[in-house]
Image 1 (spheres, one colour):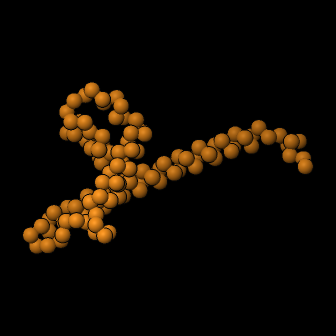
Image 2: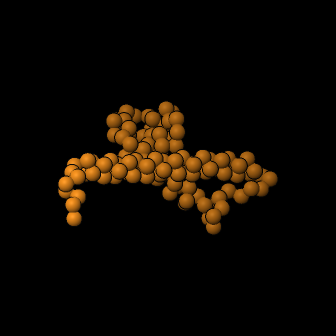
Image 3: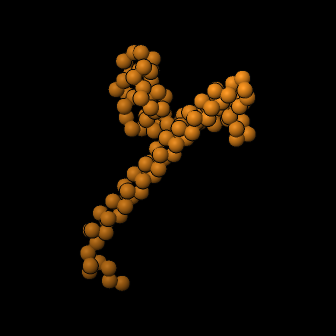
Length: 110
């Protein structure tokens, strides 16, 4: 639910006020997808590397708000990507350790 969202991923996953799909919105995969979607949305809000909202006297607050939200979303997106990379590397290293544990000393003779 939108009113219960506590972070960008939860907000991106929010489905109005109903509870019909709540069980589908709690998986790690859906949260990762939501963060990636937020990153894509940020890209769409920018033009030539700058945010579309201009920092003028009339809408200075809007520009500051957009920049703050964008910085927060980019930070969260990068954190999520770092965690995903670490988990992938850890999984690969665990598999390597399992294989190395099965190799016996006498099997190494060349």
